[in-house]
Image: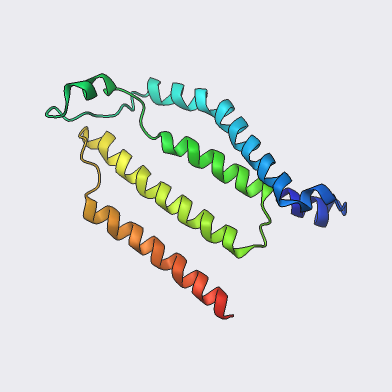
Length: 152
């Protein structure tokens, strides 16, 4: 997005943005900054709302200490990845969109799993069959998208 902004909106050719190594380093730093800034707020919010991980009663006794640990930490990672990717990649590249789609879709599956755990107050979440079915559907959509792009 920044590459597009400078080239198309500001009509400034910033050669440094053309180097993928520079954009990779900046994306990593952006993701780290986003997670450091958003992380404490996110964790505080999840703790205040008591969105803690339910633990099975029959599980190992060492897992009981994890009870109440805020769940949905993957959402924080997804936020950092998506922000950094959208800011620092060449958005005209269709492979970027394919990877973003798969990443966000798999994150949504994880969110649904965690959400069901929280609502039902159990450690079950989605069944393995449902997870595999949704993941397979996402993979199929991505494969068809990439195959069609290759042929056109």
